[in-house]
Length: 218
Image (cartoon, rainbow, N blue to C red; front, side):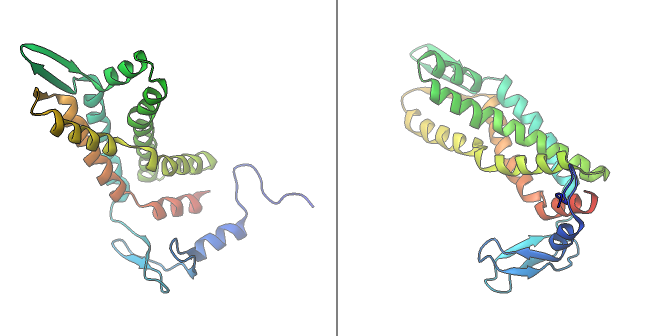
């Protein structure tokens, strides 16, 4: 017997199961999927954990926040991050300079990790979420590529470590602040805004609504 699946499609009985049932991410209970209106949230009847929610204007809000993230990301990358001065000698550095300095000093693994976790992965996630939100906003047809983009955006979430980077920078500034004069550059405030916008974007995005949109149009 041949495989019932075809490229770019999902069998009707699997779509029906996904539309009818939902599994709790905490206790793994299989529950009937409730029908929610915008602003409502579903909880597991066994453990009380949140299952999913219908967030208001999630596509528009996510799109706006991701566009704002792109703007401040450009500021964070293009402008000086911090300037230090002591005894008349000053030096400034950008985020890209910090990666290149690590590379030139032989710390290749650390330089590569910094480039991926601070620069590449956050940018990829911003662009993917921007594309997903734009497609949902315009109600475009979804296909296999849409599902792959949604999965990749979800997989990149824990690897976008701009917030961890900023926390480490703040701790370092507290330690060296008494030894040198520090001037925060535009990139520092751009990176701070990026952390804020990414956090707000993750909160605004409605993951279940996105996957429901995919199921309805796949």
